[in-house]
Length: 364
Image (cartoon, rainbow, N blue to C red; front, side, top):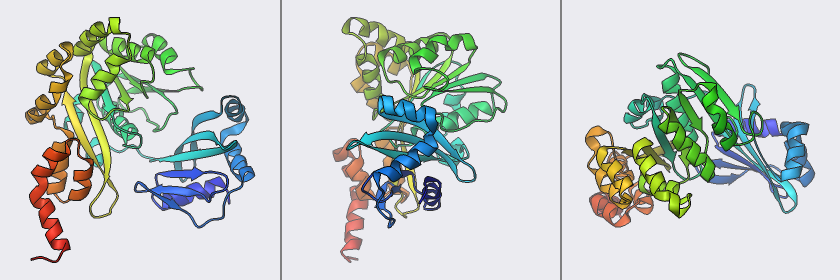
């Protein structure tokens, strides 16, 4: 049993993640469910041997010093994988996430069509948010691909690690990896202006300095994409402001009111027919009204403006979820359980929920 064989099995099973841990058989995540393979349990020596081989001597020394390691691994003919190695009960363990070989387009992924307009913006900050494993990197890759095929610009990405590889088309693309090409997101952002970029992708806003530098880049005429682990637009704005000291927060709100262009929040749901996953999206576009709410510390009112902004491509998470339930794409009970405003959502889909329960009980 070797790692390349296990990764090949993961891809054949259409799995998203491979988990390796001493004392357990290899475990896969397929359509969000954890599945144990029927392979033998792995020893600590087997796990260490597999991971040392893919990490290489330099990375392994860094792992031994820091006890955490992230990098990308390419397996010819199979695909690319984001690798996270960590310690568990004093032994190395790992999670390897499959990255699709080809960058899918906005249309192929079924993303909201307004993202095509957002990708063509000349400047400002665009945030893609959601929990871990919600497809944020895939959405960002589609946005960068859209720009690459249509705009003669210089795109600089700063990632940890580099996941999707972009081949320059109409754009020129520079992809930089943390711990390989630069020490940190903040270090890379401090120097990115000297690299003559038009578009900057920051893999994740992890600290105050990165947030401040990204906002500044948006202010100075660049289009900046990044991610946060937040659930909706209002929470995203509040999180960005809250990382700053209280005495700076009014200034940051004023900056965001000017530079923020859009927030796309997303989660993945299982399809009702069992054929994979589907994305559910909230889209906020920074209209004049929303900019005023940001400036005036009234982000709790943003939801109402998103609800009424369908004519320009805005939608709340629950609005999109209702649409997918009505189309039969998402199971109504799954949707009720994960809606952002469960009581309101239940009232909107109650006829569908009652119909499903009647059918399950055999009532005509």
